[in-house]
Amino acid sequence: MKRLDQVLAADGVPAELELVINDVIVACKDIAFKLRQGELAGILGATEDENVQGETQKKLDVISNDLLKDILVANPYVRGIGSEEEDYTVAGHDAGKYLVTFDPLDGSSNIDVNLSVGTIFSVLEAQDDQSGDNQEVFLQNGRKQVAAGYVLYGPSALLVMTTGNGVNIFTLDTTVGEFIQTKSGVSIPEDTAEFAINMSNQRFWEPEMKQYIDDCLQGEEGPLGKRYNMRWVASMVAEVHRILMRGGIFMYPYDSRDPSKAGKLRLMYEGNPMSMIVEQAGGASSTGRMDIMDVAPQGIHDRVPVVLGSKNEVAKVVAYHNK
Ligand code: P6P
Image (cartoon, rainbow, N blue to C red; front, top):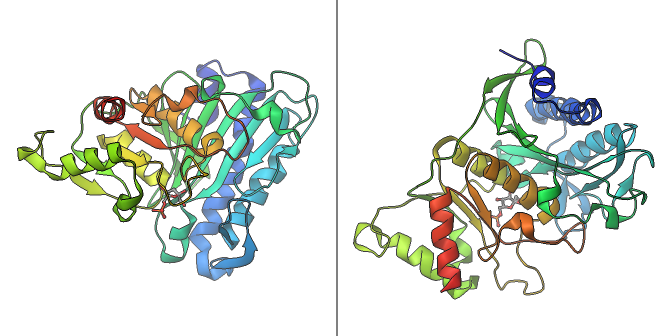
């Protein structure tokens, strides 16, 4: 079985990009260790602070963010970073070529109840010589990503990533502290009968989403002609991983709780990287009306409605929105 660096080299990934990805992974291995220590390290619970999203920061949100930020801004090939936990983008080296955006600890509401959380990351190439503390240099659509991945801190710590040649899975071998390839060429089943959505928001959805879910709930006798199962883990990384493994559809649609926001999830460090992974695995990822990776970002913290997973089911949801 191959180590991460061997797979990246075999995929023809440029040496500088490999060094950037490697720094992400070094930070994620440290995050994995701290999560396993949990209460023993006194790092559970919340801080007194709110992030730019208006969310109360968990201690591990801040610790994870600082681990990733510190190692990446010190990397000579990194122009800058954007993070869910940073108000503004942070400059690295002006001669650096790569831009890294990340959600350092996605699903952090699960931390204090010992459920799955993850790190999501995306890598872009700077298209001009603007400094990394100017968000403009990051504002490229998802098709421009050169790498995307997540680390799922579950029963195993798994790295799932793509550099545009399919999706590989690596398992953290804690006896040696290395991610070892355990699956290549991941492929999402084209059809599914399992949806993931937070049903408590149903009254806030657009009519098209309400109709689709109503039709799912009608089962075999309904217009979709099959019995659906439902899952909701409140951790996008865990939901996406389940979908990569057995198919499914994950939705966090627009809802009217805050009409000024396009959705809850963030385009640059949740929607885009997960969309690259899902599409590279033969799935689809849409806002409900267009591919997420075609959305033109206006700001580093842009929100986006998300409908991703088994491509034939995503196509159904898009059809409901285009009726
Ligand atoms: P809710 C976690 O906070 C997150 O960003 C995603 O990982 C997850 O899918 C979603 O929000 C959960 O949201 O409203 O169900 O708590």
